[in-house]
Image (cartoon, rainbow, N blue to C red; front, side, top):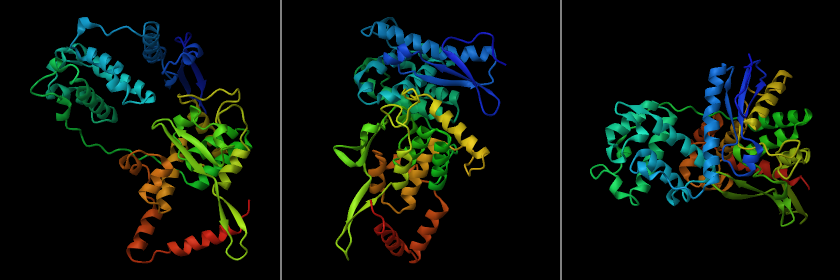
Length: 416
């Protein structure tokens, strides 16, 4: 049931399941001014009290950003110098934070550190405690307040970095016996959920179905995530512009940017091969299926993926909701689209395909633009195909050369 009055900047939407979803959306005025908080889902089937409590968190953050915007030179409250909350506020404005943490990730740091400050222990609120009073035992209690969860791991990671980077600037504030108490926190073992993935056939079944339903922008989003390994946040924020697709300075490539790592990716779309018998030059299309989808994608704006009015989907979950609802619609129509289809699963499917194709780690990272090997390795799934190919190679039964010959023979017959 919809409450009589909605909190400021909130809206509701009837979901495909029949439930009512509530959302908070930053006003356009503040979006254009650079507010990092754009939109957020508040929950499903909330009571009026729950809705107001959920919305208050985001409205308070918006109000705090407005105050800082009005007076950007305002210094932290020195009357509370030496407290954990003072340290957090100073750290978030310090160059040791702004030069190391990408702008996209900064709101998450503030959100997590705010929650740390609001925790209440036996002696009171953590944010009011002196930094010098935070020992390993206190850090462990703070971590335990979050439990053995991903959020708890973030708390330890973010606080450990804050202590390490701020101690050289304010050495008098920190303990001498335990300079960084967060290094003594032992993380609990937990079974991490493995994100799912979808294969090429599923991605293009969705893409073609979305085009048939007049949603070419959703089809393009799925292809960008699978073929060129773009994060959903980069797609929604416009990091795949039409000007990067077969532009005049690189007519045979697509140029994209990965927002999280700030890495530019230039993917070749074709290459020229000379026929050994005729000497004729043949253009081999590398992403023929993907380009067919892009050819049917309407150009609503400067970005390949945007709303019909030309506005970007942004950082919120609106694009994800639209993709999920389209997948549900196609599944109801009889298409083989699995439950839970998402852009994230498209990207994980593309990363898995890299490994199934037998690429080296260096080749895979050249395509995905991951900065570290550790970050890259977590994406590819241990599929049956990967296990089978590894077993065949182990016993000397790999048919990789034959497969490559067949692929090359098939490509040689294709002309631009």
